[in-house]
Amino acid sequence: MVNLETEYLGLKLKNPIIVGSSGLTSTPVQIKRLAEAGAGAVVLKSIFEEEIAYEYEKNIATKETGHEFFEYYDYFDYKIKEQNLEKYSRLIHQAKQETNIPIIASANAVSPSEWISYATKFEEAGADALEINAFILPSDPSKTGAEIEAEYFEIINQVLQYVKIPVALKIGPYFSGLANSILKLSQTGIKGMVLFNRTYNPDIDLDSMKLVPAKIFSSDWEYILPLRWIALLSGRVNIDLSASTGIHTSDEVIKLILAGAKTTQIVSAIYKYGPMHIEKVINGVTDWMEEKNFKSLDEFRGLANNSSISDPAFLERIQFMKYFGDREDIL
Ligand SMILES: Cc1cc2nc3c(=O)[nH]c(=O)nc-3n(C[C@H](O)[C@H](O)[C@H](O)COP(=O)(O)O)c2cc1C
Image 1 (tube, rainbow, N blue to C red):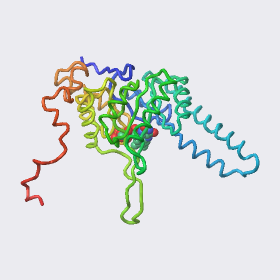
Image 2 (cartoon, rainbow, N blue to C red):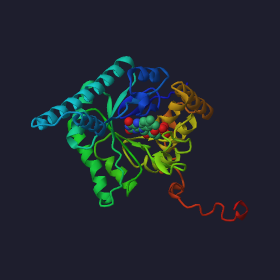
Image 3 (spheres, rainbow, N blue to C red):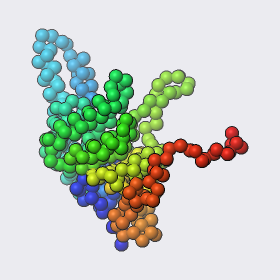
């Protein structure tokens, strides 16, 4: 018998398939369906400070401004935030009641005080863990990599002071020193990291020549980005690594576990094929393990990581030096 159980952030999961933070995990009904389809855990849709601020500005813009404006402003700030947090806490609570899988809350805040109020509120509501969605795009040319990277440590320090539930940090790949940053971040007290968030991107429409949103769903070859970094780092950090981006079938799940991931997060493929796809992925992993005679995930986790392979330089190779060098016929 094959055992797919895995421990992630100190939580027991019946299998390593997590439905990642997205619209898929924004209502109790959907979360129940995902749990019934076999998900090992879910990460709830993030609560965004920016979105709350937007709602608040919209409300302010529709009101007349007078001498009581500032009092009103304060009141509204508090009120909208409270309502959103209450709604999110109810989602955590209902998801816990409707399922028996770990429920991981997710937040994206800008100001330190907001991180604290989100984190403590989610803990109170019964979340099993918190995923910090802290993608900082290094687009400000006046800021150095070190300055931007320091912001991640500030957020973690704030949150860890106030919550006892396990905390994971979800990041993007744009760091000036990615390996060093992941290593240092892994030593802050967080229990895991999610590599990588795949964000909203701009594209250009050739007819209108205007900016438009790029495709929001990943393609099935994009898993090679988390694969390289998880393989490079899983043997070097003492926290759990969860893979995200481009995981569409059981093949990618197996590859990412071979690279050393504790869990794998799926979003785009579930949007595309529906919740029952989870069962197909689980069956695919089980079949492969039976074929290879593996009884548990630990037996093959990390077999292809930096610490296990005979030629670690393979993971750091970036130039196509040997390939197509002599293929003039394809040009
Ligand atoms: C429609 C949509 C909404 C998303 N919302 C969030 C979110 O609220 N918070 C978050 O951390 N990631 C969010 N993501 C990113 C996903 O969690 C995931 O990291 C990304 O889609 C890559 O995984 P995939 O290749 O399986 O889609 C969202 C992705 C999609 C497609």
